[in-house]
Image (cartoon, rainbow, N blue to C red; front, top):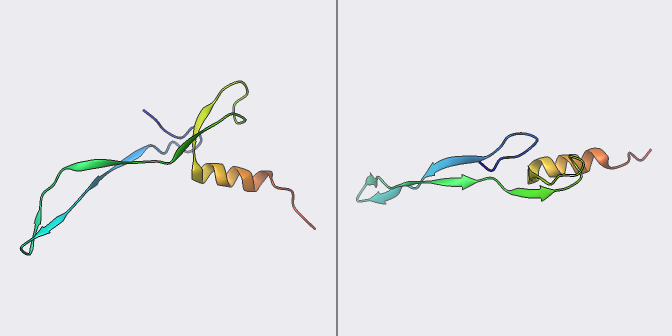
Length: 67
């Protein structure tokens, strides 16, 4: 299963609801996939999948603090 190396986010199931004559029509469910990217510098010598949300927070932590 594809999931984030840091937070473990993978996918969620979602349903589409179609309105038909004031009643909801039951339709099939589908997967909402997480936005995963391959990153090299987290684990030495390996490429791991990291979600974009974790990737953004990692870049914020690495930035130098100006005084």
